[in-house]
Image 1 (cartoon, rainbow, N blue to C red):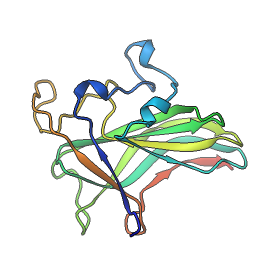
Image 2: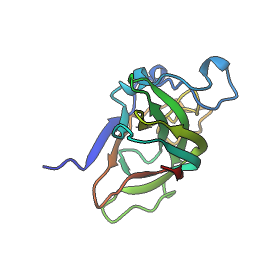
Image 3: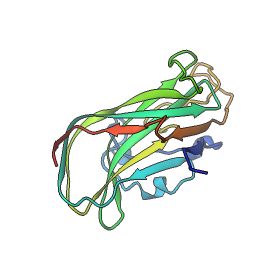
Length: 185
């Protein structure tokens, strides 16, 4: 049977969904470019990595993740992050974004999947020959973004934690993709 989707399960422990790096008004400790290998090794983070680049690729502008997904919860988040992977394997974040889903915010496809768009922050980066392009997909990015407990309760007072079972589809009927504004390849 051909694999058409990849499942992730949001973390049950509210304290272990830490997200480092990226744009933030918070502590400098958590801002900027960070090594993402530890995060990417988690079972609740999907990674999609290109082949080794044979030539430089320049990306300038907005980055968009168009994903076909399904969730066990009506209230859930999907987070996507663009990274550069060095030949050593070190994965460095470039830009990211999140979408919060609530009932009725997206019209389901005929098969019940949802086509969502995550507007990832614009970037200007030259991927060099020998590097790889990587996308991370997860169900949140705390502390960068407020934790979504999945219950629909107000975020400031929510106390009921529900675990989301997420599926990201990638097949001809569900062409999940990352749209990169390539200037020069």
